[in-house]
Image (tube, rainbow, N blue to C red):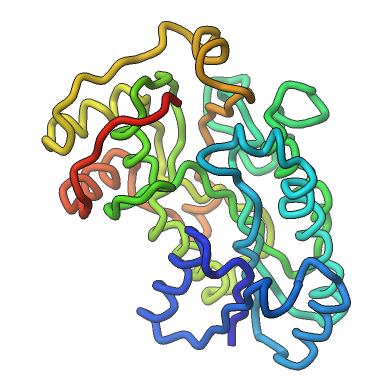
Length: 297
């Protein structure tokens, strides 16, 4: 039995879908039934269930984007930093192995040598550098609180997408926003990412941090060109002239735009397809109504 915290969210639902497809028994715990933010409540629950593994897909991302975290700091800190620390305490006391869905948004840019950031690289987009959004700061803090955790995976997801039109899907966002920031990023095909998470446990790969993004990176303009080539959106896309203009006219919080290295995941046998191939497949199989522009991002 695998317990999923945050199982009804965007990522959590993808975990449920993957486990149903694999016929893996699981149990989704909602906060409305058990307040797992409270140590005693979580300890009591897991003592009764005694799962073989736990997945933490809970967290606070803000809606419609990370700007919302700037005005909901208590909830963001609780969901992204304090909750993982609580889960660590309980799982270690009960000797339950577990995995935590983290984020690559704790970095900005590329490694000093021009490659992607590796799992061993310290975050450079965090409270310690005083250059980040509150969201990214709390995600980096969450990883700090898990340093040295026993029997724990930290899975770094980044800018998820797949073929299903959804407000949380990166491709959907690009088609709906009226104006875009052109930046280079690593992305995660959502279904591949959660399969890699599950496979890391099923294959008993060594515990630790894994960058679970599709190998390679793409710019916003490159993805937009792919969208237009597949004729999913025929409007004219508009881009900000610079990140400064974006921050002045459209954003509240700084954005993480970064590239991650995926060598460790590939060598462990839980790597994914190249990012361009994954995007092409999502666009080819796109499942959604026609979209109209909304806010800038």
